[in-house]
Image (cartoon, rainbow, N blue to C red):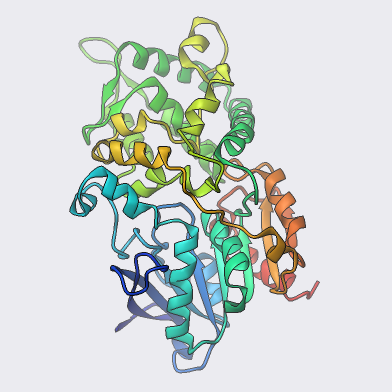
Length: 432
């Protein structure tokens, strides 16, 4: 273990080996990384542990510099473990560079089938017993991290003293099709709200999409910006500052050139930053698998359900005079053609989309008998996680207390920082 300091904090790197398949404990093992964080003046104290599970899937734990955001509140009373979930960050990363070491696309798909919430929670339990000597800990889950927390309550509640969720209560029963059938109307509302705030963006978005329908643009990383890929910039609209970021992006799209107006280098660079999956490929590869619970293959559910919402078709929109609708929080087969970070994983993703043996992730009976104090922040009209699904789940988990708010968007635990965490702790402890 290596320890070092940042302003106000002492950090320690931990690396653990865990089974790839926890059902085969003597089989292949992988490495999982966690960063311990404790307040500088309390490093020698016997503090309770809080483990943080990042959103995603596919994102490593956020790299803080000092006691930023909610972390500053957490270290007032906890020793925090920022866990890189398997396949992310320093935890045996899975991407276009490393996955070929597994062999064929079929072998890669079989390997990645062990990277869902159930395996992440089993990793947590293995790590907890090593770090705490068997004492239970508090878990904080953001977005997909909240899906993991819900599985934790289903599978290993004895490992928890408290469970906290921000923007991540999943449906206990909905499959991928149900999730996306609820998602497209939410996305449409977010786009309509964006255009109400920035009406000048209606013409800008139509102009860019029309240009791309005629001439898809090469991105600096070798990716291809098509009209459909441009529409997926709507993923920004689920964050607190996303509508403003999208507006600023659209207003710098074109520059005059000798050959006529062209998409600017600055625009293409910024679009690439927003759309590239190079830093989090598992988000795309496993995105629909996180909703699979024995209902059969996901079979590119977002793409199939999109056909039920023709207003998202750019060509049909541009044939008329309506506003272009952006998309977001959906992954499609064409992502694995336009993004160079995903192209080598196209066949692997197809095999995962065809997979039928996904196990259920949640135990409604056990959740109905829950005894762990649980609090969840549910964001009103959250673009990424359906609010109605979240509230239905909240009612199904015994003792869960919710804070439903429109003060923040999906990234509230980052934007609201200490206040969001403090509110959840007060709720979980029954202090209000």
